Image 1 (cartoon, rainbow, N blue to C red):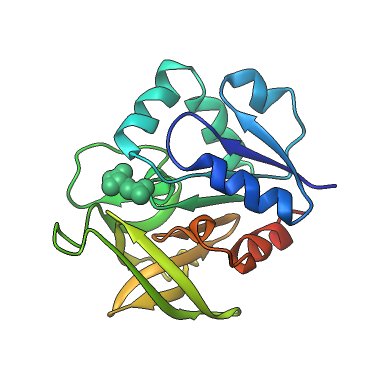
Image 2: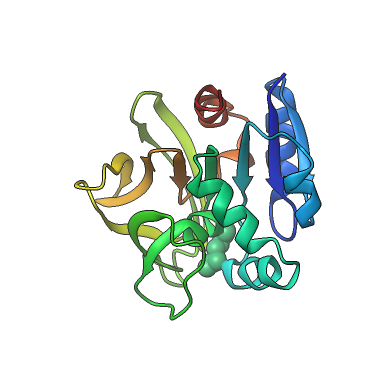
Length: 191
Ligand code: GLN
């Protein structure tokens, strides 16, 4: 049985847990450094929430460096929304940087107030049409194709899902719909 860590410091981690359990994998909630080091993980999910808060807690709880190293060493990681922001190397409208792992440039709260939250059905490469729920979401302004980043989905011309090596990110929240296909896609990469 695959063992998937879910960062459970803040935000929408319970919904990821339910989805991963439904797909038959074991969930390990990550709340402290030992949870990362004492479990053999096949992958990890960084959920949505508030990137500034999660970033601060990662440091305060002394999880940051260990997580950073595990991702550099190739642990499969899926970041949704705030999780995407945490993985980005560049953020255009925030002076903070977090894990700086993925060669993408991200804009936080990119849809402005009026379109703060919305739902759409759109195409995801390799999967098909899927429901996408956006909540005060970022989008990816550009990716480095030279570094091997692959765009997986676009909405209104903006990149909303991408992957690079062991990293998969979505600006939307697949865990808030009943469609399991994005999580299944991630689990397939956790070998
Ligand atoms: N607006 C949040 C941020 O900037 C992300 C929102 C979300 O994860 N749903 O971190």
